[in-house]
Image (cartoon, rainbow, N blue to C red; front, side, top):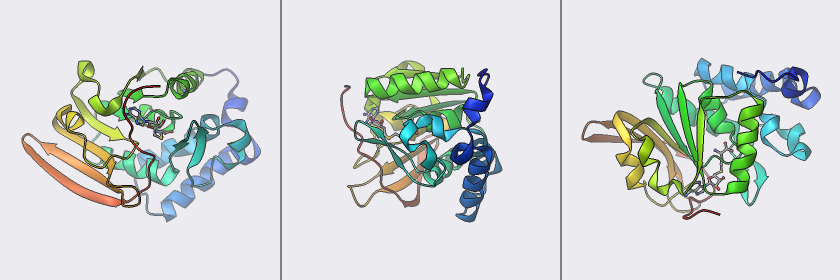
Length: 224
Ligand code: SAH
């Protein structure tokens, strides 16, 4: 990946340099992230390209940042935890993300799994995310402007589904689009009491595990 000709530009300098990414990785390690595959990708991927230029100098802080239209790019720690949770039992072949946002989580996934599908309900965000995927030469991401509450049935089943917006309950159509041994990771619960859940399907058996307290923007309906 990262076939972009202006490599210096893509990889950044100063607050957006490789040293800044290395410091973020060290911090994530201290926070308990131990999956080396995930850490390596976060160490490579230029997160500053996924936020507004005015915020680029803060892109390697371990914090969520606004991306416009009331939405946020998730905190790197949360991205790392969610990604590690779907890689735990091996690399899934096909992954669906609900809530493309900036495209950062989709890009992280695209560097680790063969095929990523991602769905976003706000067209403006999706178009910016697509530009970033092209700039970074990420060709294994398919994206769609749609309401992710219904998943992406034409492309199902998925070996992993990652939901990056919070709902009160697990979304049933998404659970149904998991493959036989698929994994879903999603923030669930009322605002202020969200838990990150990991649901492992084994045929007709579903095992749910809590990964910790989180605070995601809401999973809404319809498209804009
Ligand atoms: N994964 C993103 C974080 C996005 S924040 C990133 O890495 O930057 C959550 C995103 O979910 C927002 O962009 C929001 O518009 C989107 N969203 C909320 N409800 C949705 C729905 N029903 N379908 C698709 N996207 C949705």
